[in-house]
Length: 269
Image 1 (spheres, rainbow, N blue to C red):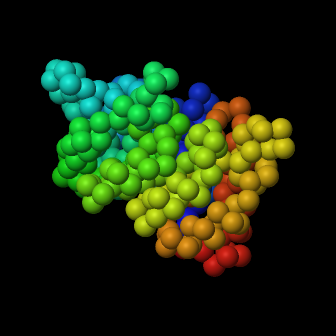
Image 2: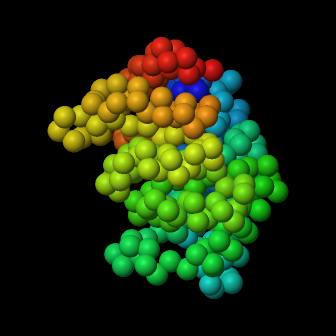
């Protein structure tokens, strides 16, 4: 396993073109690039990032998902066509940055009734995911569905239904979102199993406030052991909010904390 930091952790602090050089200077080896608005999707901006990233490895790209991802499932042909054009721009970005993965949320369960999943049409959902996945595969990028409380994979069981019909679908385990969903993260981990591509990490303190890994009470040693049990060898990416830490050097301290655990457990690359 390896450690890294998502540029989402620097959202509202630094734009990506400044975040990547900062992470590189801090000695962080791996990142996920959080593309947060339309002007950041596409080749022009990706080339700008590629020019300043140094030897920082780009594990994955992540977009502000509600901007177009839900419309990839839209029944309106025009809306769907526009959404796929934006998807193509994001895949351009991934290709230029050398990112093998795309972190995907899919639909947005905005209405309360949709959270239960009682009205989920898995036949249509699978058909749409197959199309999206095939477009990603054609560009050499793996579609990876993340567990998110308000999106497609908001409960255990969704991933296995989709993955049974989409062999190339990968998974992203988000510890924070499992906590918000009030589901033990190990249930999501068990479901994704060998399909798990990478992990988004955060910690939580005694008061229930989110913080950086190593600053709270979460049992990372047990998590790493469970990841080893499913044969996971990917990236552990710190993903925090801008108010969850003080100095940006704390991001490197968090990676160092995780690196020490990986070495102790014989799980480092």
